[in-house]
Image (cartoon, rainbow, N blue to C red):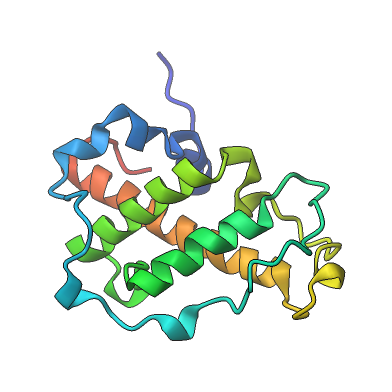
Length: 163
């Protein structure tokens, strides 16, 4: 089989979140248990100030705006949102894996934040005038950072060869 040359971003998108479903991450020293109550950080400042009202218009690109924000805000409220300042740590990997797993369970893959193209059609219907495309980009960036960290950990473990 010939190896084709691809970029790191292409590799991440090919690997995607399928690695979670295949159980490849089971070899990593991560637990799926909820965070201990004593370690929960105050992440309330990271909340997206969405009231979860029914005013969101249906996104023409299929993004489930309310559910993406709901999952993100729930992680903030519980204090288990992956902190990018801890990138590379076991805690970051554990929280990141749990966040992505929760996101995948509650939001269909084709309705996740990365599908947003920034058309801004949704912002006009928001009674709080939230910058919804920017909020979705914030969620997408968090997911990408976590995926890259998990990919790097898999490469370090020899599961994948670094590109």
